Image (tube, rainbow, N blue to C red; front, side, top):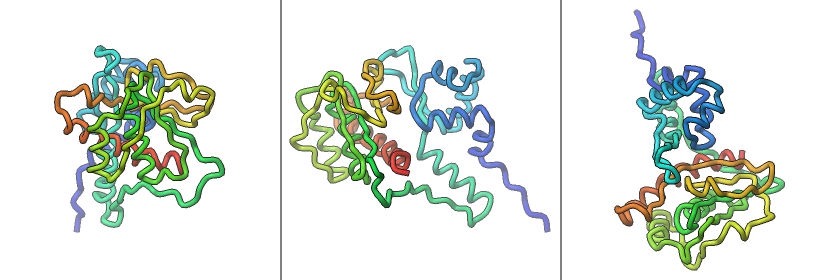
Length: 248
């Protein structure tokens, strides 16, 4: 009896190409613009753009216009889609290879807790949301801080509401802080959630790992509270996949 040949899963076809795998690997750590990816992978821009288009068509990579310069776009790895596609690829090969992509929780505290800084412009929505969600998802063994280049007087009420209603997190009484108040401190991971603050964020030690998440300001959208709910969900996905990286 001849076993019917199953088509190669789309994820395998896309990811098996060396350059596309390199692009996926780079985007797994940070959002990047095309010219930055060109420098990282050391290939011509037209070739990089071609393979990025294939990854976009396969829904493994998304793009978003830069809020700092609308002529630019940031590429982002669709983490949940990649996880689901990888799990489906294993299942297509053998029923026992069904994968459940659950990020591991740390079991013991490291000798020195990694220090993480989230930044955005106003420190009133995106960066405090990320700070709160990382702590909520098991960041007890981490030093987590957020700050802004031009902090607002108060947290945005819709950010507070979205975290309270969606995750039971209470940020009442929390006040935005300025990046200048953190001068002299060292952070192992500096994560910018705003295209504008990425351009002005100061250095926090030579060994700091810089990561960028290109996330629009929900307060600038016309959708109101639903925009905050959507942005909180996006940040939550990124934070859940970040935690195993911070506490392997």
